[in-house]
Image 1 (cartoon, one colour):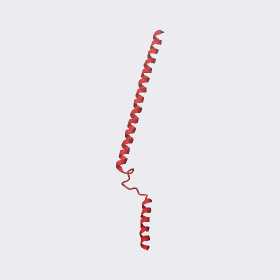
Image 2: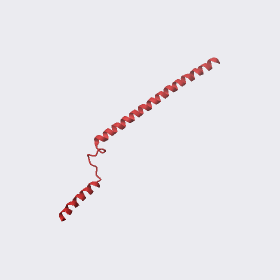
Image 3: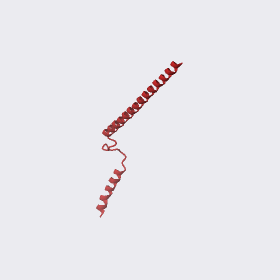
Image 4: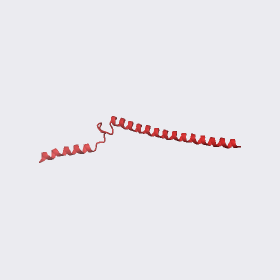
Length: 83
């Protein structure tokens, strides 16, 4: 009976010590170098796509403003030619 208790106590301590360790293991997925490189690559790709979309919208807005300016210039020329 005494030997059974003596054997269980070290196992309990091992389980508790494993549960409360604060050190990060190299095998953990979120902390591995490969995962962080892949995550950064995905973030960079998202940023490039987002910036490309913003540039596309700005270019479309510039074209619309150029067309509006051309129409206003035509109206201005018509008004000045009638006078």
